[in-house]
Image 1 (cartoon, one colour):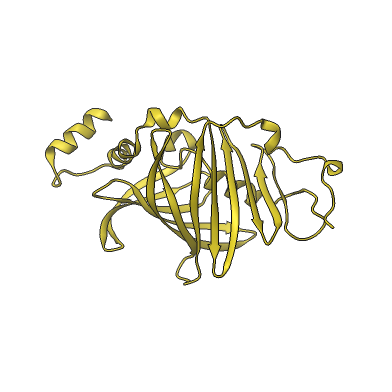
Image 2 (cartoon, one colour):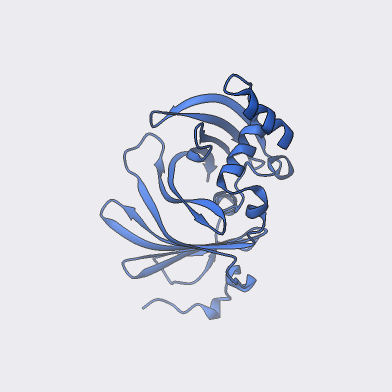
Length: 242
């Protein structure tokens, strides 16, 4: 892969690109695969804006597939988590007790918060990846990569030709029998742990003007995260809401 990347760089823009070369160049631009694989856990703290509403959010992920997302809006906390087998959550309304989420939610959480992302080790993960060609994103050229996940979800990832950084993701998934199409604009890359991460993600339903924006305020690399934090609490451990 490295030899192919070097040859492609020497050959210049006229050289044909393969999907593996485009992915390798993107990883190198962000800091390299070795630095990414050295990240065992991550905590992102930020705020989400949706119209006039502001929410605080904390996303925690730990290899191989542990995820926890806490969101606080109007003083009420919502939790969604995945312990590697079961997705569970604490909804903002109701008793405040944890409950098991549908299988679709587990797939969605593990897809969205995979530390490496679907392009890294895609063959091992069982995904199918295809380099579609070049497309315009925000007036700039980007490589378009089509990803068909093992779970069946289809995504289009757009990597800026100049910087090799991901700038846009379009998704298509089936949730509770309904097909959902989403899109995310990614930017404001900054270093954390020797690797570049997007600190701004604007997302929503594809083709709709209503969007929510996540602004990351802090990223912690390899924080100590106990596995128990990702497991669903027993009912007696969750106090009802007032």
